[in-house]
View 1: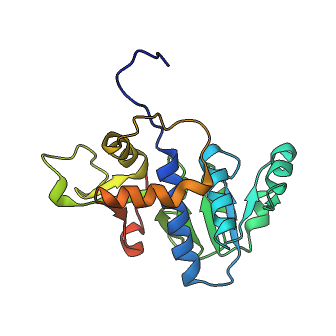
View 2: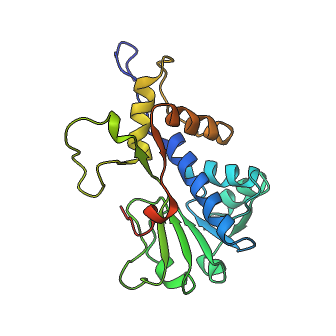
View 3: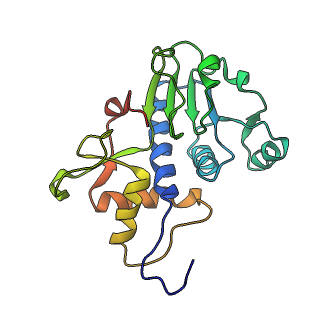
Length: 211
């Protein structure tokens, strides 16, 4: 990127990962002992989510068809699986990759925390699945002005990746937020977001929201 530019850039991955981790932790607490299967764990955001969950005591089985990527995840103490069908007996899924095959494999009445874009969970053929949008947050409406342009969201809702731009704009650090996602910093991102009125939504409000 040009060094002469007058703006900072963010992909929003840190705040997205932070929101997903907290929502998975909250969902897992509702079904203690339930096995959790995760797709997209080798991506930049997904890997940070898996590692942060491991630090929080939430174990997930990470799917990847690449042996090299599975081996790399295993060096961090993560469990892996080479086939999606390995998740057929897991009652909770963390869906971080667009793959329509998840609709064929997820068990009946599974719980899915989704941050893949678009959402691969079919609301018609898999209406039995309790799907939650893990990357949608809410913003203090008293801080909003004018109309919102996103027709998929309520006025007070905001995707975590978009909220990250507000977080960056409000920061005095003036640093880009790009590159690898550090799982050790995710809680700090949530705290910073909360300081400007951006918080997690109640779980019941995340159910049924897809992107």
